[in-house]
Image 1 (cartoon, rainbow, N blue to C red):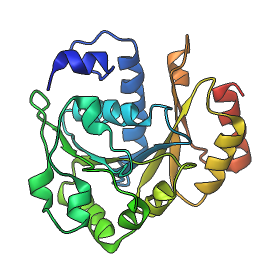
Image 2 (spheres, one colour):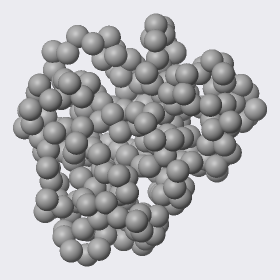
Image 3 (cartoon, one colour):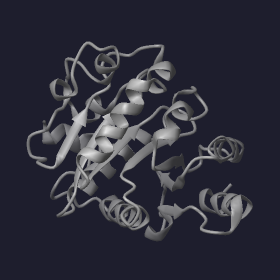
Length: 245
């Protein structure tokens, strides 16, 4: 990988002094605390609409988690309509998850370990397809998630999914995830879109939200956990307060 490219893409590399690094460390800590006890290691990153930064959030969270002493991370590009993880990292994979789901390739042939990131592995998406929802809800996908979850107990598996309100893909995959993180963008994600996302994800394990592209925001506001017992109404009120809508 080209470190200059990564920095230009705002991918957090070693030695980066960007204050957002601390925000991702805080996010990492919250996620570990929320998932470690129950062995919840399959995480799904999504948003409401395109352009909110969910792919960059997935990449940076995965890198941050891989810096933990006892953790490795597999980042899976499951945005099969618009795969972008490889672009974020400046690499050009020849194949990806689509090829596995179409029975053309085996998983070991598809995994990439970028030089300089020993505990960070990528499963690219492959070439874009239109039947993404069908592939993501297939028995092969369910079996793959099960295998990835249990094969390496010390590994987080992070799936980058399309926005909830754009396609059915994220909802098709949601039953397979141990936890869901919703990316919202300051001054762009609307209250209406946020409420609709919450409604669509109400039956799935929403861990919390990441407020992206925030300006002059105190560190403790970058991440807000899901309600432990306050119910969806109080959770929605807190989300509205969080994004200032």
